[in-house]
Length: 350
Ligand SMILES: Cc1cc2nc3c(=O)[nH]c(=O)nc-3n(C[C@H](O)[C@H](O)[C@H](O)COP(=O)(O)OP(=O)(O)OC[C@H]3O[C@@H](n4cnc5c(N)ncnc54)[C@H](O)[C@@H]3O)c2cc1C
Image 1: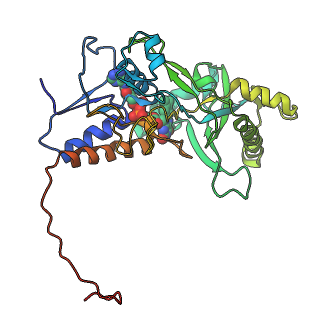
Image 2 (image 1 turned 120 degrees about the vertical axis):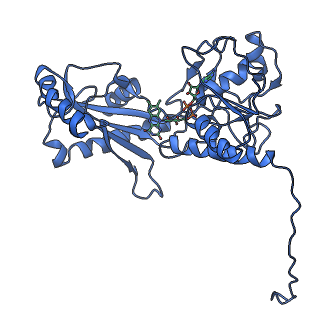
């Protein structure tokens, strides 16, 4: 079957592009290709209209297809179609540290015999009324902070979770607690996505290089101290608790060491197929891949810098804007009649 448009990646950018394009071009046939266990491994897309595989996989797909830093591609035996040194560079992410507080009460969500017993009626409440503890998304509150009151806009963000969240929940704890994430909103550090293999089914090498610019660690230390002040406010202090990886009163060096060891992503990677008006950028301001015809990147990887907030809504917007650009390029040029109005030298319309 032939399609007018093929979009690779059905995430935020890809779905927004596909649905808006379907609205704007109802006569067009669109294929939306998503990775997964049942993916036909022999599927070869010759020329998709949009790659929307996200900040890690879009640069990987470009590189596997011959668009990327020439020396790196050659090292993997890939024929270079277009030398694009910035593909996979400029990885930016919100680096985040979580203050976890373990408590002796069973009030927050957690694992204990009493806690599990308490969940049984909660389960019934949720099934019957859609309410109660199980209706919580756990990350129940958030906010933006200025590390200095003189700043024009916030430089830190906090997310509060009514449970212990350690290492993205890979490290589960027996017991109960709550946590406060704090992240750096406009980090200076830049990481990379490079190929581990020429085979696109092998995961790429992701190196966020968090804290490669020491200003990010300095700010996160300030953020953690501010987050502690929030946790010490009377309404939260009454829940008490003991911090898992940090301690009040520890030295600055100890705090920095704990943050550097446990800080990690809060899932907002961008920038690896940077959009720009300059020749070095990966995509132009219309999201077209430089050096390739008929191909756009439509996901968070095109963001040249990281926004000071969550990245999903801006990515959806990128998808919608890409649909507009593609639909406009599809339309035939029309003759437009412009009514001319003569303007008198004084500036008054004649
Ligand atoms: C755990 C988590 C929580 C988050 N929470 C929030 C939040 O609360 N608020 C917020 O604003 N943002 C949140 N984000 C960030 C947000 O999800 C991303 O910014 C957004 O999804 C980026 O969209 P994208 O289109 O660039 O990439 P994605 O949405 O990741 O889409 C990429 C898609 O491409 C597919 N793909 C990859 N390789 C291939 C291939 N070779 N062939 C076919 N398909 C492929 C992937 O399977 C995926 O579906 C969260 C992210 C994570 C991971």
